Length: 221
Image 1: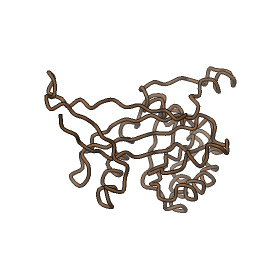
Image 2: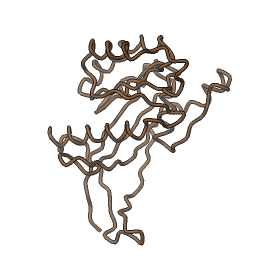
Image 3: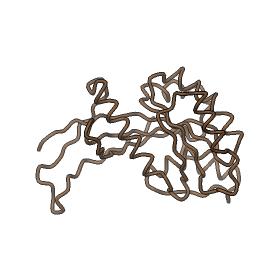
Image 4: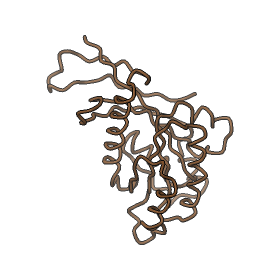
């Protein structure tokens, strides 16, 4: 048996309630989607997972960084304003996904508030702006000009993605690019400064010839 160390990055989901953070989390967790538009408000809240975290490995194809990283994604599950979770949620975050609903100007106008929270409580985190519900083109309220102006006003973003958690459009591309940027940034800065996660690989790669890492899931108490 040989042991390979790979860096692990904590990523948090931020944004207004209802923008689809938990739907993005579910895509990350088990590639599923629950259509809450047909549920009552009570059912919608019950369908939200609650404060949770889950880890997945990603292969990185950049020649200037790690070849494999582990991402630990955190979701508030609608508990954004519960003071007792705030510090632990933001603490040690290497990246934050700032999510808004492209069919809701209200959630877009709330971004500056969430951005300031990230900058004050996770000041070293890379920040990625995510426009969710891109599939609802005829209901779109946030224009490309609105987004471009916001990014110009707050030049803190490491990337912007338009995605649909419902159709899965853009989700894989988003994680691929985020993984590349985290891997390259960590390698360039100081890989040893990041938490290393030990994974055991079987030297005999198995009948299919692929390396099989040990699965790891985690959930906060």
